[in-house]
Image 1 (cartoon, rainbow, N blue to C red):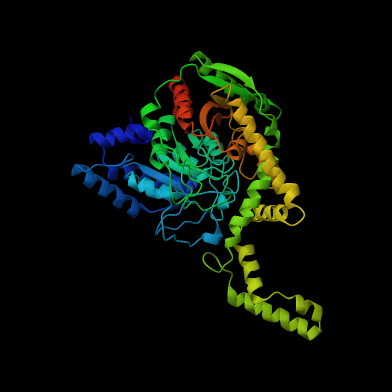
Image 2: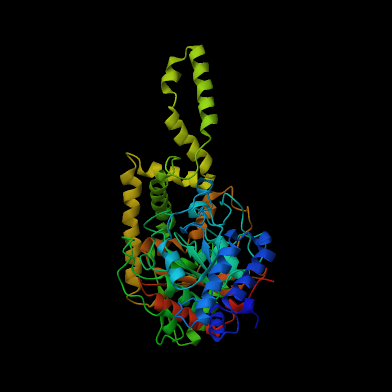
Length: 511
């Protein structure tokens, strides 16, 4: 088996046995990026020199018999929303095009401590706001299975690079499905951990109560490996859960006896593509053949999840993105041009004797704020900031934001009740396979509905994973979603591995 056909777990064994060096492995993936990323557009920044220097240092330590970390020598791609010291972090936005953080996010620190080789920063929807990776300020990412299709979003680059063999492992973030939906569209495995399982320190915030970083890889076994490296309590993050981190790699191969699977009737209604429906039902039969029992359940408030999410997330985005004002860091409008325009406008109003408009004319500071944000943010970010600002404004706060928080609690209670009767909830990750690039650009609401099956897990703060479970007649991957109670990632990974041991969907690759 060639390097590019191997899983991360297999590569780790080859590295440990001395059959391949970290430098050779890194060079192989860098060559793959060089050959294919012009067509895919998965990466925003690849630093070959940095990656090879890291790899060679790991090889030197290995030859010296030094103790190495969990990921020693494995290349890992990172979504460009995690701060990397001395390395540009753009969040896919013109606003941060030249921002170089002075510190590493905790996830990055943990990857370095595990001796991973950071191979590049991947493309994403601007500030993680989007479901197609078309909202990046710099480029579009294409689905390796069909270049006219979206890879999903906002972690489209993180999923596409794994699917196209440009990295064995990658890190994405998931605010409403941004790991699981791209994993489903690109035919890879992706997990959103429980909120608080992985530190958010250094993760540039979109919606602070929803964002969570997580792993993407070919298999559940590889996801377990990467999750074990990045999970754990972090005193730098006040939302980090102070709970122990299991050894996911030690238990992922253990089958689950007496597994009770819940099928939510709300997940199989109108709008679900027939091929997706059929593939998910076949996946359920695979679990039944391995001894799992299937139980119909209800998540009655799930029908309100999209509306709830698209109030809470924009409200938090409006607050978090207020800091980008052109003063402290990031993009700033051309001040000379702005001041010249302001002077011309003032001169014209004075000549016309228009005192009312003169009095209302913006100060240079207000004008700088306004033009900086207008030029620095893209259309989708502006849309969500305006939605959030409106919902938080006087007279609407209770009617929208507070009510959404109450519904969020009801959604969590639905899950709490369900997990008293079942171990995991099984269903589709997305209602359809990957849609065409540009297909939904003029219809934001339809794009938002792509998150129908994923946003609830973020609102409830639970863990969820997407695994490949089929291929459509047109050759596109289909994703199966498993959801678990908070901090039950171990159970999710074991169930996903059970399924992958019995099927070969996760081994399929684009031509």
